[in-house]
Image (cartoon, rainbow, N blue to C red; front, side, top):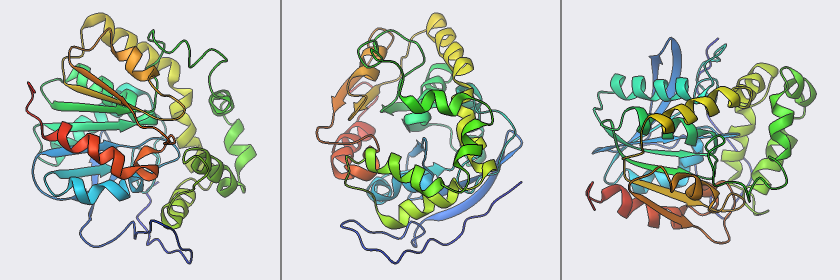
Length: 303
């Protein structure tokens, strides 16, 4: 089943407002690995691939795309099963999502890209860099964990976040949440912005994207694939090192846990925590994120 982008409208106001479908952003549909993906494109130059998590779509990057597009070709897909991309029956493990990214870059004529992943977009971004280091110029990973790699013990001292277990049970969460998607998404957006909230137009787009049992099933499939993704990460680390220059960015609640996981396996790692920032960094503190991203993405490989 395919879905197509719909205009986003909002009657609310916000301290930072935008039209997530504003002019200057090109929208394409690209079939990769048998799945029809929607991708938003902006700018020209070296490619930067942006991989979102849950409960996001490409609009997660609304407040950073313009600046990045001044010097880069920004590629922001809706991951398989999310946003305006097609629902897929399977393939939500990190390795398959990384393969989707490779196929997307190839379809768009890009032979290399900087890759930026946040939340559930981080494991596929990591595997992409591990498996195809010649394709990934630089790697940025944010607010996520990489399977069971050592370094996250303090963060996990009281167990994984509650929703991991809830989402992991096949068929449960989508049945319970049907008809209450807006309230559920709002909890993540409020928590992920330390109570400040996000642009209402972006919020409405997220809620629309995750409404309905099929949309929720796809969203929760990445959680149900976590054991497979974890095994893929362990295998990649056992077979080699992360040689791509990497920036690990933390906020609340992950902090430096991801950086600690990467430190033993990465050859060129920079870590940074953005203070007073919630989980959804690109929406909550876009200017602070850009201050880190812009110099890192434009630095020479050996810089």
